[in-house]
Image (cartoon, rainbow, N blue to C red; front, side):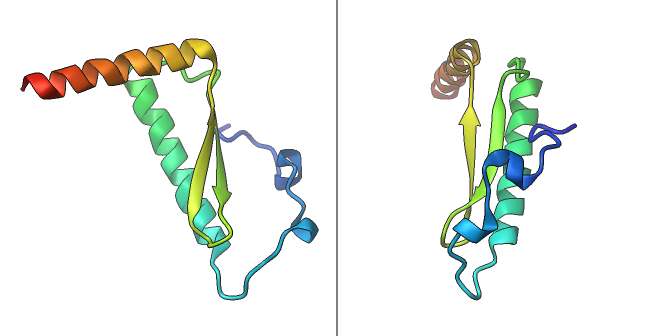
Amino acid sequence: MNVFGDEGLADHGFDPNETVWVRGVDYVAGWREARDAGVALMEALAAAGIDVTSLKAQAHARPDGYGEVTLRLSMATVRQTTGLLRAASRWGRAS
């Protein structure tokens, strides 16, 4: 199982009949790029010591076909990530 789970599109509330599709827009490429970016983010956070077990990253394609990732984090994960980013910011200014 990856960070997006093994659910199908219907499990995410996606109904292709309820969506407006624009001819020529490559939604699949945008979604794949978002999926890959979400996986990379999860891997980077895990490598930095963040507990990602309660983090959910969901890939989407915007109406223009560009990918985006929606994150759902527990408060503990938000606090851990915030601390990591603040420490990295201070370290960057010190060098």
